[in-house]
Image 1: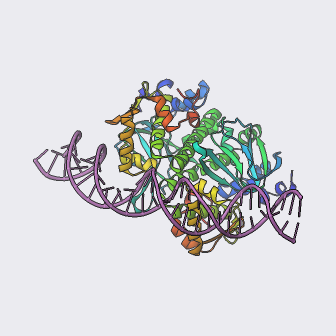
Image 2: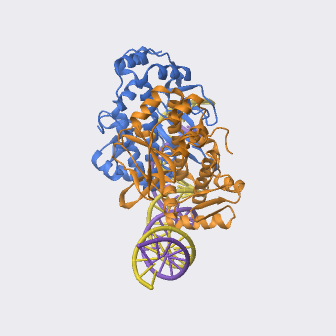
Image 3: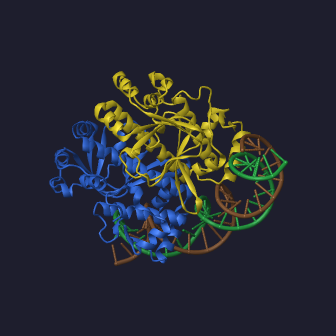
Length: 248
Length: 248
DNA sequence: CGAAGGCTTGATAGACCTCAAACACAGTGG
DNA sequence: CCACTGTGTTTGAGGTCTATCAAGCCTTCG
């Protein structure tokens, strides 16, 4: 266990995350900080949980990127969500026994494992934390809905711009993108699997967004060059992220 | 209040629904049946809640079809979910103050309203019901994930076949499609908005599925003619619906 | 330095869209 | 009873966004 993370509520990634979407009383925060978690370092491109498995614990992402995905026929893949520091990417496994998708690191990552028993204890003891955890899965669901609308009805440029807008807001909500620049260790192939596009097309769209002066994307980082115009081309409205205080 | 619905647990739509995905002790079921709900009849094509609103109650669908949708620019629309008898289509509003999408009837419907206060009472008093409600929103989220994969990576024929497979299983799970035939008061335009396709293309795909002898679709009803082949063309696996006892 | 993975670009192809119009059917009213 | 209207379905034709195939380039790393 790393005291850097867990000694101080302001630095506890899970607390930052939960507090970004809801208010939690001090007592319950303190209780959460006392929870024992096994911390593990994991390489990039490692499946943490696989579709069909029956996990007995949930993952808390402390550092790095992860994604959820489904595999389809003919090697096709659909990424369902990106996850960043503080996220609980498979909290649903607490109630849904069998994984209906897989969870995979996209970069070297540090994660903590929370046993379902522990979650049980938290939920039955701390009503506000219980509410916060439920709410967290509901925010995930809201993002899923937005993604359905994206792949269903948006053009390629809008989809990719929208995804970047989403990640900007989520990073900023937990204090990880001060100047509209943040870690983004995602290949163009993965971007394609997330947006339902081919690598080739992703590449062309990214080239366009770059040449329009909206973003720069290289070396595992995104920097937003023109937030207003990026939002406009994405037709982005952050309210679906249900962040307290709205878009930063 | 209609005693037909609420006098007997086996006929209570919400109880059928919750029991289809999880186990709930008798005491809590009885408690749920005692909950007061205002029952209202609503015409087809009426918005029950709209994006941006802050509802103080949740909807329980007693009869009829409803859908959740988002409106996009240029009159584009994306349907996010279909809802049938027993569903709680906007339960997430209990924790997410502002609606990020709208809820609309697709047929004449009968709904009951559950105030957030009532839900509060249920959750704080009956832990198994609390778990069941959370689980219900998690099943919704699982369906959203499947839909992302559908619009993102599946061909038109697969998408529509898959949607019908999903509705077959969901109807059967609550006893509403004995012989693989069930109510489906959905226009082809709405089918298109759900699958991310144009009306014209939906029409052609439906024509194909019909001529392949997989389904018949008319007069507000779907009948599955060849379940095995329909599943195969959809590449359908019901596990994402997290129905107790699996696919019927 | 060779291998591997990721990025980039060109050319061709296909799935699906848009436009347009005809058809079917139920409800309405004279 | 029959036009009239509106909504939903169906079909044809042409167009486009995006996929696929193919290949070259760059960077990283053992």
